Length: 102
Image (cartoon, rainbow, N blue to C red; front, side, top):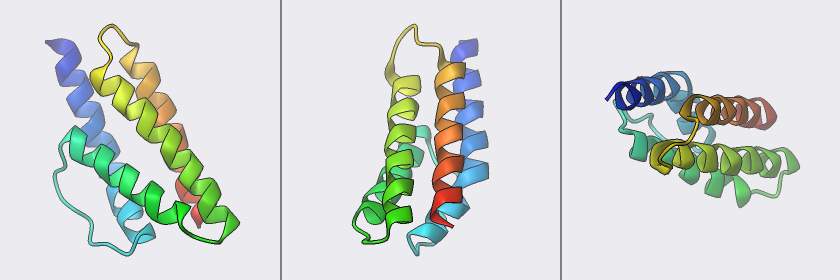
């Protein structure tokens, strides 16, 4: 049970840190209080929007978001996975995406 709580708390922290910035990147209103699955959906939506751009930095940011989505999904769905490490990698890629797109 502790893993579930930690995972949920960590997703909430990622939501708090990155949702507004991701929404701004795609010209959307930031959603509030996302579930882990909805946060992943937002990351994938931003990835897809940026991938469609002709700007190189947006395409590079999309690659970061693709990696982040993979790490987030694995942290949420893979039994026995090192969730802390997966979520840390996701955070690195989320930050990289935002920095690259800016």
